[in-house]
Amino acid sequence: MKGILKYVLIGVGILVLALIAIPFFLSPNQFKPTIEEKLSAALGRPVTFGNLSLSLFSGSLGADDLTIADDPAFSKSAFLTAKSLKVGVEVMPLIFSRALHVTGVTIEKPEVALIKNGEGKWNFSSLATSDAKSAPKAAGESSGGTPDLSIKKLELTDGRVTVKSTTSSKSHVYGNLHLEAFDVSATSLVPFSLTAKLPGGGDLKVEGKAGPVDSKDASLSPLNAKITINGMDLGGAGFVDASTGIAGTMDFNSSISSKDGDAHAQGTAKLNKLQVRKGGAPSGVPVNVDFDSNYDLRRSAGILKEGTVKIGNAVAHLVGTYDLKGESPVLHMKINAQNMPVQDLQSFLPALGVVLPKGSFLQQGTLSANLNAEGPTDRLVTVGNIGLYSAKLAGFDLGSKMSAISALTGAKSGPDTSIQKFTSNVRVAPEGIRAEAIDLVMPALGTVTGGGTMSAENNLDFKMVAALSASNGLTSAVGGLLGGGGGKGQRIPFRIQGTTADPKFVPDMGGAVAGMAQGALGNLAGNLTKGKKPGQGVADVLGGLFGKKN
Image (cartoon, rainbow, N blue to C red; front, side):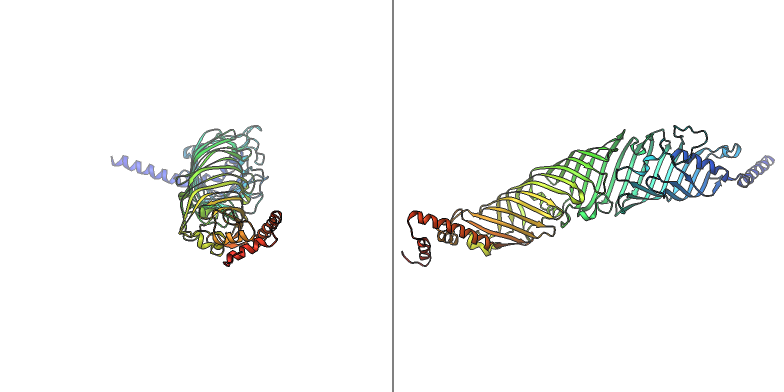
């Protein structure tokens, strides 16, 4: 028994010594041309790396300084670089027949450059396609096909992806990239999972299956996947230009499927602290979005079949088209919202750049809107009409705010302001909001019409006219002075200045004088027609004001 054990130990020792000695007789660099050739032929681009090292115990080849060339139509720099590469191999065929059977590839700390041109095409579109012409042909490869290199497991660890465009100097970096793919082949369906850190904060996770690789354009390859995003910074991630004023964070869940260049995406998004306009402020409530969209990968354009925006119990519907080819997405959207409760909307209004007067809040009412949004997101223009009905602005005393013209308007003072109706045609653009054809009905005042602007800094400049609902002291006198009798229907021009948080109501003296002059001329003509003396109407009113009898 001892003799048998002795021979076993001797055999094991010899085997260990052999394994240690083999690397000295088996130079791994002899496989370098074969590996480079196979990878280059499979990807359709030149693939190079430095010296190879062999570890028989782990069954792997190691390489330094991996480089995969980019499509020359996009860049002369590399598409992918990495300091180290590990290639798993089957040891026995390698030792005894010097045959290279790849079991896995691990690329550590890769740097990847993704570039989109002005037509919306990506630099990875030509990877592993039969039309790729930048790589040398592998031995025995026919000119019309792409060689199939199968890898049981492909892994990219601790990578970094830089996304940029040929039409802009801006770039966005996605870090901590980790990709795992199994049974990788250009001709098969490949299960994969990908995670990454997003620019500006947040996490990305994609799980699904992709392939086979489209023989003409890799970006058109079939895909079925689930996309999960948590805490994405809308501006930092590069989806929108920060100069547009759009900001906030997004949680996103979507399923996506594509085939023959046509993709369909359906899912939900939750937007926190959303700001949609320059000069606005973060929304105090989350905005939830359900969407169903079709996307044409060849045209980099899509159709939003259905979009539902929910802010509490307030619901708006969106449909339209979008184009992602250029530097900024181009939108053509229709927005329809009916009878949205304003109590649910008021915490969202700052996101639109609308700030209620200090200390006030919307206690009741409904808001409806029909709008069209057109143009690139950094110059988006939204036009249409809005309507506010049966609303109460609590904590806002209109009478005291209009004290400078209260003698003319007769506005009743009170802690709240009731709004029977407010309708207007609006235009929202980066420079501000313009409101025209305003029709405002308030029981305490009457009907107010006019229009004006609110700048991106929330400065107000509105010219308004109040048609008074009842007779009151000075307006009666003024009406009588002009020979019109005064009272109900008297038109008083005024301006609204200041800011939305602190509006200022100022008498429009120029408008008032013009109105008085016009009225006086009309009354003078009327008096002459009735046979009165030219100054008789004025004298009667002045006499009445000072208690004199005619």
